[in-house]
Image 1 (cartoon, rainbow, N blue to C red):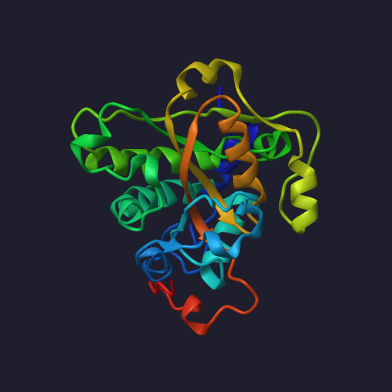
Image 2 (image 1 turned 90 degrees about the vertical axis):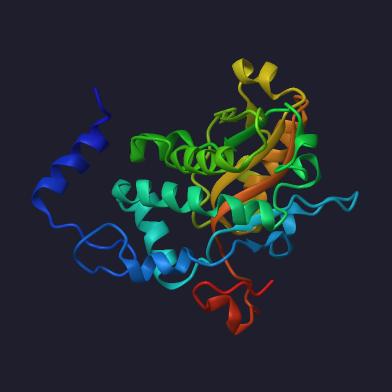
Amino acid sequence: MPPLPTVLRELADLVLPVTCAGCGAPGRALCARCLRRWSGPPLRCEHVAGRLDRMDGTVLPVAALAVNTGPVRRAVGAWKDGGRADVTPWFAAVAARAAPGVVAAGAVGVGVGAVAGATAGRVPLLVVPAPPSPLGLARRGEDLVARVARGLADGLADGLAAGRPVAVERALRLAGRGRDQVGLGVRGRAANLAGRLRARPRSRPVLAGSDVLLVDDVLTTGATLAACRSALEAVGARPVGAVVLAVTPPPDAPGAWLEPGANPG
């Protein structure tokens, strides 16, 4: 039986007209104009998230599919916290379509640098979604980011060398009590995750020795991806990069950041 939030959303869809989650235009969950915000090449954006920095100088490569302003911010917010699960298939399709650009942007790191060639061999590439909080999962009725991860994995599988396994693995969980990251600052996000993000015991055998590409919704401080990276490395996985639907621009971002389809670098 579907979760109650899912049932309620489906009933609402029968009564209320569908509008764009980004701008409110009638017709569909994301209109063509708002989708254009995800039409450009992925943005390399790890440099805007200080929590991704490490003392050894290594930084996890991250590619964002859009900039978290205007219609993008509204659409992602409605999807995550406004009950707009009807946007999920659109975001999954955006991720699938962006897969070649993610590879071209170098956001899959050294471990899968030969992602399109035979040297990648048969080392598995696992696409791992950042886990939802228990509260968020209960409120939304499903793991939204996992659906986006599936779309990305499908797109990557179409472009990888023959024989290179690609799979989605919901390998991470949040243990103990905490809250959603929404609205928390840099320190609050890190404290909220401290010691809570762990690899699932059932996933540990497949994680060991595998390349991992992380997926999350929005990159802000980098606290979530940093915690995911540490949890994966603790069980022998190799996090080689991450993909996010959107990146929150820094306060001093140039105007180019705000242009749909632009890649300011």
